[in-house]
Image 1 (cartoon, helix red, strand yellow):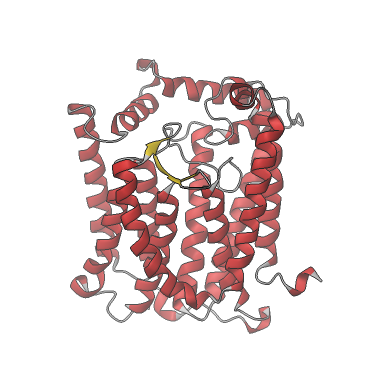
Image 2 (cartoon, rainbow, N blue to C red):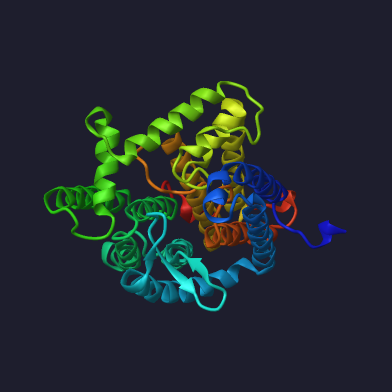
Length: 390
């Protein structure tokens, strides 16, 4: 009976349900300190709240997957036009929560809202729309490439002062979409060089003039802590050390749900460092299972994109799938100290509100694309124009 209403790629549905169940277990295990600090030890308060957010997110995913994916082309424009003013308002009057960017508070329901979540999804959708519409001019520098840079620079520039890592990840996502969308490799190379030079300039400004804007000092401290940890005594080093202890306690294989010790020492073990809790309570084997779930999500998203006969649908599915899995990989890389601390959450697993909802909306859009494909034997290959060899 339920199969009549749930359409689209079944493995993606299964992955989202599994990640939701895993999230409930991990969040319930990791919010002990938070519960004692704010709720007199009532862990069920956060469990029920998180369960409601996950259920509402899956509901949003269902609604999103029922919308024909071609409608998201027009929705992308509207979402971008809404997100830019919201980013400006957030930059001016938003509040910092747990040193994780700037947030707006929605009146009446008193729910915090990170506008960068909307902006990320809106920009990826808009890029898919733009690239699909300009395939005939995509190699032209003035008509195809330059107009594409305007929304990228506006959105990333507005996010950057409060959350440099999110702006950098979104910039990389846009570059990947450009590559898939057949933009000239020479133009992409120039953009990458410009991005690296801009990042270096921002770093030098942060070193020369501390407190210039936003959380630049925090980002500079994180980079220095990663490059030369022996010379840094900041909180960034403390986070990494506690994460390493959690990993060491987990070993290769472990089954100790709810028995984490490092949750009492790790900053934000229920969000930024929730993968450390995975490794402590379930060992490396549990960490690999989480990693494989995200890799399968990426594989299925690419398969959906490659099978879609519409260029917009192809770019939409692959672009959104890559952005979600890329963020997950960055979060996991931080936990094992492969990259500096970024403050990125683990999509669909970390405790959150609007971040989970926008993740579900994003996956719902991928499912919307897969819903319009028909039976597997009727699948068509990705449009030839999307190949750089074309």
